[in-house]
Length: 250
Image 1 (cartoon, one colour):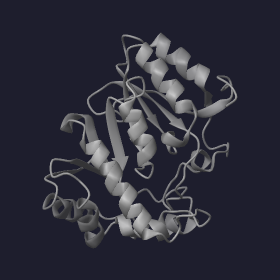
Image 2 (cartoon, one colour; image 1 turned 120 degrees about the vertical axis):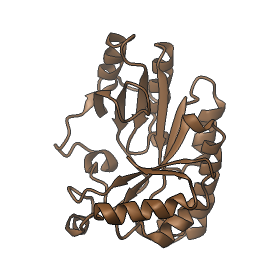
Image 3 (cartoon, one colour; image 1 turned 135 degrees about the vertical axis):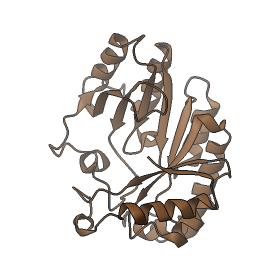
Image 4 (cartoon, helix red, strand yellow; image 1 turned 60 degrees about the horizontal axis):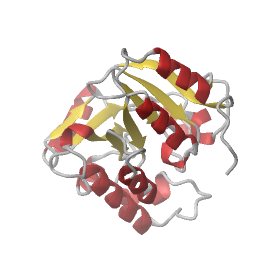
């Protein structure tokens, strides 16, 4: 593999965040590229791996300079995307952050258990915290989340297998070092989907829900979908609590 350039646009740097790393003042870096096409995703430029002008892109050198400057102030770094397990910069970023004394949180969509396991088993790359997205019932990924050009499009069994395996890997972490996240998108997250999602999560999971935003969606038709009302969202979360006690709206 060619040496990676530190001076090419690689992702979006959030210099300081109180929400991306639970309980930790952190920075975040959102890398380009993703193997899914969630129709409600608003990070179009990152997911498609190109600069669409909606977000200024930063280099890895800018990230490293920021981490060095903020040593002793920031405690953690969240590596997100896109899907960071696909990105060749991710190992480089994690190693550098750990060298500088940062705790590292990895966000993943859960579809790459082999890569996730390799990171977990490598002391230099092992994240200190893992957040796994679960977007709808595992059986529905093959049709509504997986891109049509993927060899796994239509293969529900594949996604049921990989998501369960990734959830098991994340569950190997202590409860305060892991979470699962779901966006309450009305066509994708209904009671039947919540029940199906809950089957792959440990009972002591932290299941964090967020409201859907109908803006700048990859699938423009989702811009016309109204989010759940606050009452409807709370009813769904209460239903999730019947399976996973620590289910809450973030």
